[in-house]
Amino acid sequence: MSSGKTFTEGRAREIVFERAGFQCEVRIPGVCVGGVTYHHRKLRGQCPKPDLWRPSNALAACGSGTTGCHGWITGHPARAYELGWAQLRTNEDPAKKKAWIWSNNYLGFGWFLLDDRGDLTRLWDVAEPTGVAVGGVLMRNTVGGARYRLVDGTPTDQREARAS
Image (cartoon, rainbow, N blue to C red; front, side):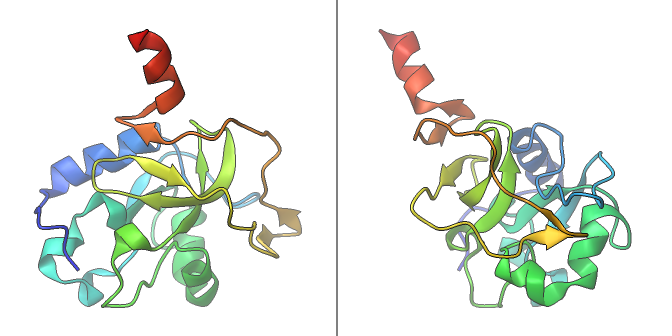
């Protein structure tokens, strides 16, 4: 399932943290502590070596494996899998597994595909998950937005406006 490109740990971390704006992409209300760590969606033991440091296989999550959103993911593997945050199956390509994350570029939560360039593709026609709540707080969008795809971290409609 490899993308054919091998990433170094440093380059993968750089791409993921830049994609996230150096903020937690999970943002579980009442759990999120701010800051970011590199969270593998497909665990190291499940992951073929070429996929280990693919940016599509990672999220920027606050905390550690036992604290913050990173810790919540570790402690709730079934729900984390449903939300695309963790425990991807060995044969699943992380670039094809959607994740329910926060995007500063879209000003809210949504289903996204993550690629190895650090771009996000918003899946507009996929319903919000039910019961995405921790401590009774529902994680959902409160801000609408234009439909566009990010290319090199810039919304395509903004790139087109600059070109004209």
